[in-house]
Length: 223
Image 1: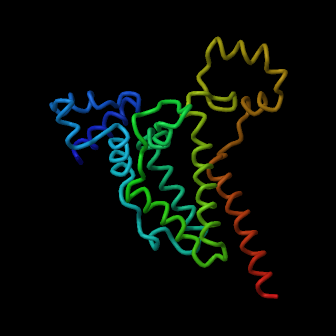
Image 2 (image 1 turned 90 degrees about the horizontal axis):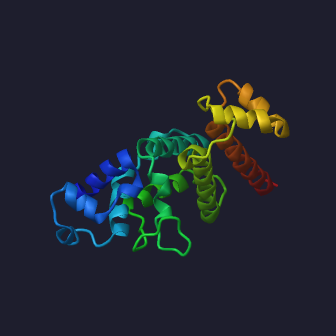
Image 3 (image 1 turned 135 degrees about the vertical axis):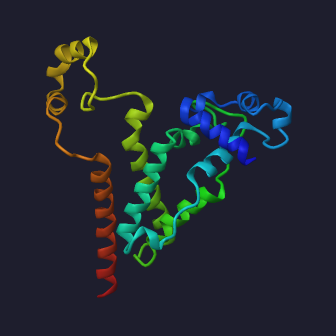
């Protein structure tokens, strides 16, 4: 099973999820497609195995640092690094059989033990903060959504003028014809802020909000 998942990861890393099929995996491993089904029952099961192997075991809580904020920041950075190594990982959840799914598969993808372990690690990072377990999990969802949002533009191939794009005649024409309608974005595209990291900036703002909530809870409890 590991050999099958490794082959799937190799193909997805180089060609994207669209290249993944049971037939392709079987061909690369010199299996027949039917013999492959003895090890993996569906594409959903294959993607589950690929995902869990690609994200690997989570680190220890202590290795993330001291204090909830440092640990959540470290966790988010590690997730982001993993997504850069395997750019298909953020999109695996789209490959479901839900109605309206962009690229449906023949089955749902279960979360594997490594994936669950990463979520558990993030929740445990906020132990002792005064947040309930449900709130801790919600905070993890918010940070995860921020991770997706800051990768979404480039991951989906739709780039705003504020991204460093190669100069093309079409883009120059668009800016010349429509730039006056969008002065703020046109100015930003012409002079992007130096060393602005939208991921780190947004993550800090999320953590600022959580810290404010924790502080208010602590003050209320001390009265």
